[in-house]
Length: 130
Image (cartoon, rainbow, N blue to C red; front, side, top):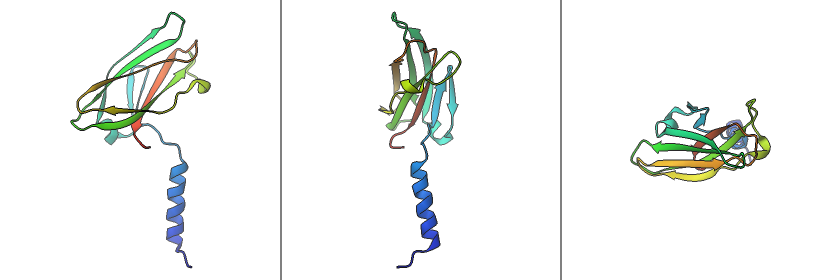
């Protein structure tokens, strides 16, 4: 059986693409919206974000995200927690969680840091299934 070089290279690139980490289309950090995938970002808008401390000293955050079109938009999101120096608390990361942004709806994404001493957060959002 003869396999063409193009088929082998194509299969390798497809496999390598599966191994590369999927990044978010948009993310919120320090109250600013950052766009990595412009086509993806056209569908979402950050309306508001807020942070407060719980009585126990944990960081409680809420980000209001709006779907800017009429169609439902299935996505995934996760929060990453940071120290005062900006270091990501890797042992406190959260898994990607599913969310559906229904047409024109505003959805609150909310979390409480799992560690005391957390001073900031990063919310990443990507298309479902990435």
